[in-house]
Amino acid sequence: SEKRNCKYSRYADDLTFSGSEEAIGMLGIAKYTLNRIGLELDQNKTNIFRRGRRQMVTGLVVNQKVNVPRRIRKRIRAAVHSFELGKKLHWDGLETNSSSLSGRLSYLCMIPSDSSQSLMARFKFASKKRSKKKS
View 1: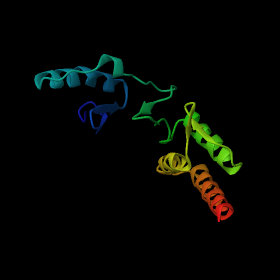
View 2: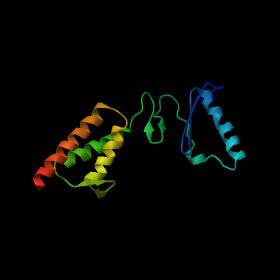
View 3: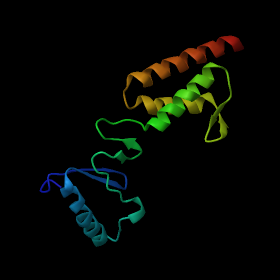
View 4: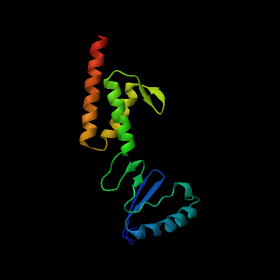
């Protein structure tokens, strides 16, 4: 990848090559190298994300800066709002609980942004209010 002026990263079995059009040439090299050790590229999971398109790596958008996809951020924000209103929480059509929402917020906060910290603060405040009501 250095010879082709590309960046290479790996998370578990996900390989990522970033750079100019030269990065596309890395697919053949990766395929050859994997075949030599008895593995193969999964064509269904192989993607080429060019400039101007949303570029995703391991579930995160990586275009200009790393971020959680907007759709997920909006869903978490809506869940926090429901929690503040005392409504039952749902995710993917199934009822869930505040621990699940807390985990999703923690995931969101791993990618620093003003909105993630703000949502976490709103959730913690609403959690304290709920605890006081139960007492």
